[in-house]
Image (cartoon, rainbow, N blue to C red):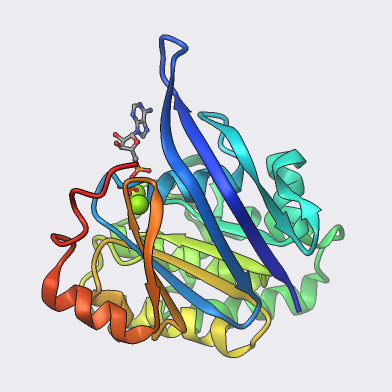
Amino acid sequence: MSTLEIRDLQVSVKLPEGDLKPILAGVDLTVKSGETHAIMGPNGSGKSTLAYSIAGHPKYEITGGTVTLDGDNVLDMTVDERARAGLFLAMQYPVEVPGVSVANFLRTAKTAVDGQAPKLRTWAGELRGAMEKLQMDPAFAQRNVNEGFSGGEKKRHEIMQLELLKPKMAILDETDSGLDIDALRIVSEGVNRVRETGETGLLLITHYTRILRYIQPDFVHVFVAGKIVQEGGPELAEQLEAEGYERYVGTRV
Ligand code: ADP
Ligand code: MG
Ligand code: MG
């Protein structure tokens, strides 16, 4: 059983001129393994900033508050240490890794997270199994990471990582963006498989309610102007679907 605790997190983005622009204005959130949380909010409200801050992206400066995973200070860890501690972040805009195949990338990531290389024979089977479940062509494993990937392939690759790396906490930022309805279903089924293990805490960040028809969150948090302004159960997502964010806009930090 793992717990990610975010307390009064305040974050600024570092602007090119060296100035700091405050984005997160005190975020409180607790996610336990086996729980699925949805963070929903309008564009520009700071959802990705929250994800990148937890992941340790250098563009963001933590100006206050704490993030711990099972009591350990995440904010003190390097990006690699965060991954080894069991944090997983699916990037909203995944980067290309030239010259590195999907198979090698995943094996390297697995080795880094587990602290030892996976056994070759079982690993090949696990990789094949993960790809079959996501209805991916086996040839995909030999392609270079993110090179020429379609939107759907990028997302499937993310979910493949999630299934193979078995993190304690996974933060999925806009996993639903750019997916057609079939890809959305396949990706959602993958997330639900991870969820059903009960071993991973999931934080789904999304602008739209669409993905929440396939993945039912246990908790919904409405995020506006750098903080959580309302919390509830799955019914809150339905309410947002009907009413949008309009009644929250005007909220000021
Ligand atoms: P969301 O994911 O909710 O759409 P973001 O976290 O991406 O929101 O952005 C939050 C705010 O921070 C936005 O107003 C955005 O313009 C601003 N921001 C993010 N990165 C930068 C940057 N590098 N320079 C200036 N502003 C930024
Ligand atoms: Mg936001
Ligand atoms: Mg975003």
